[in-house]
Amino acid sequence: MLAFYGWLRRHPTLVDGALAMLVAELGVGTVPAVGPQAAPKLLALAFIAGMCAPIALRREHPVRVFSVIIAAGGLEVLLLQRPVASDLAVLVALYTLATYRPRRVALPGLLVCLLGSVIAIARWAPEHAIDDWWTLGEVLAVFW
Image 1: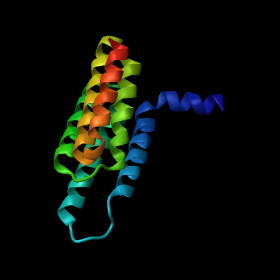
Image 2 (image 1 turned 90 degrees about the vertical axis):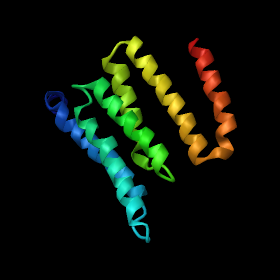
Image 3 (image 1 turned 180 degrees about the vertical axis):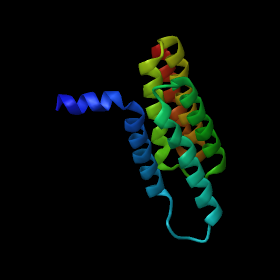
């Protein structure tokens, strides 16, 4: 078992590429397979690729990967009518940022993610938006 863990440590890009493929598969599973709206499906697949492909380089470039994934996620909120499961890539990028960068870099990343989640909920589930603004305020109060 130790040899297997050693192999995993020596091949981080391969391991992260497999993680990217797993997250992408989760996202593809949420895109409807049938229907007359081919353009939204292609757009959703483009967002899945844009959010998952950078995961393969997450350990080498954590800030850049986080930035690309957040930008793709922001565009997804603006352009898609509902989220896809590959939004899990945001959590992977935030975890990587917190693991490989100091707190002064990771904490603003956390705040960006919190604000982005509130905006996404306001866009995709406006009936829950008021509760989430309070939740964001409570989380920020803890960090203050």
